[in-house]
Length: 146
Image (cartoon, rainbow, N blue to C red; front, side, top):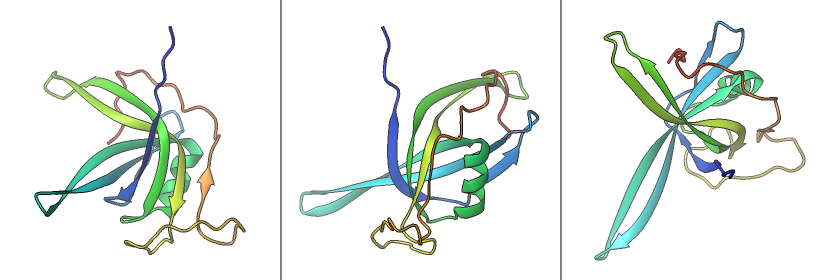
């Protein structure tokens, strides 16, 4: 039996991307993405923010590092993945992250809270980079340098 592992998020970056070259010659970027939801309870507006760790590989990671900055709104598609490693004290550690295969830049580069816009003429700064090939294979025991 097969399953579906797909994540779609739209949120804002909480920091500039961390971009690193790894030993295999590939590039990896880590994005911290905030998504928020709000509701009204007992006449009071409530809000909750979730933080998501996004990992991007290869050429897409390089492009994200070059064009994304803190506060930028992005659309991310990918899959959930859990990694395991041993820390310096020999303790097993785990992290669950979204491995992105699509990152679409929304709004303008300097937009902090305005509505996102789409520019189908290609003259704006909205980007949609897809299909840069598969992420490099790595052993789940290998530590990503973050």
